[in-house]
Length: 113
Length: 114
Image (cartoon, rainbow over all chains, first blue to last red; front, side, top):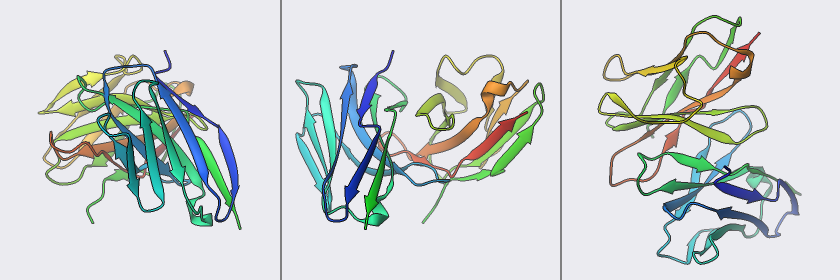
């Protein structure tokens, strides 16, 4: 059972453009939705996270939009930079878990100069 | 800034051999996790550990796997008899406590089973 579905699989965007990654979840017990950024050979690092009582959260150039009724959330990277080239994973965590994160399949973002 | 560290960075082993992957979580963190990532695939949860016992585990975490916190700093993952399909990147993560959602990941150990 795929708890978190992520799309697209890959994305190429020009410098200065907007990158948009979408995720949909099935488990209504999820109460925490982080986005992790992973560079090749490195571990995932938390980028930004949201809880379902908020519809949007912005940190710098990164924004999460959250639609609870549709069970969807998305990451927007504004003014994309070559340094943003990485793999991005969305995840969900159920309220009754001990912190278990269930990740989406990942999106490889390439920002061209 | 404190970091989760993992050793070794790369481990090569023969099928059927036992391996121990080591992690040093961030000091004073209370929750510990192991995840794995098969090449090109998503990160998968293996196990969570709190108060010196397993709190949750996935279907992947069968009897071949075990975790231990042998002292106040290390957190280990043991695979008793490795299989080819155990080849993956294994990430350790830690979380400060109940009031913090953020999990901090280590750089990973790449396990190659031949």
